[in-house]
Each structure stands twice: as C-alpha cells, then as structure tokens.
Image: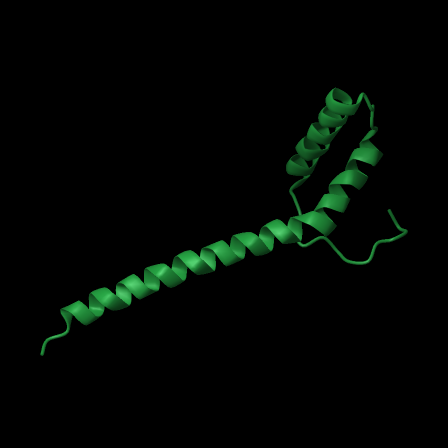
Length: 86
C-alpha cells in the first residue's frame, strides 16, 4: 500500500504471526461479510490495523502497566516506612 503510507507500524509480527493474522482476517471477512479476500488484501487490512489502531492498544497497555507499577511502588514504599526504626 504505497499510497497513503504516512507512518511505519508501531509493532511488527513474526512471519508466522503475520500469516495467522492474515488468515484470521480472511476468515472473518468471509464469514461475516461474504467477502473473499486474497492474501494481498488481507495483508493490507493487517497493515492498516498495525499502523492506525495497534498504537492505541499499545499506549493503553503502557498506561495500565504504569498504573500497576505506581501502585506497587507506593506499597513497597509504605512497607519500607513500616520497617524504619525510631
């Protein structure tokens, strides 16, 4: 998809993962919309998702991890304060 390619995908897949993802896209489009996509078209859809949608999920995952780590570090800090001798 040379036209409209504004940014590289945030994440890349292994060859096997990409093949499996394209097969899943082809199955979904056939089952849901009765569209028979070829390998090229499925790869284009996958590239669109990788470039435009995956970053939103990635950023959300990073935010969730940051939140969990912050809570855990606060708990550790509390535990350390409790161990302090007066």
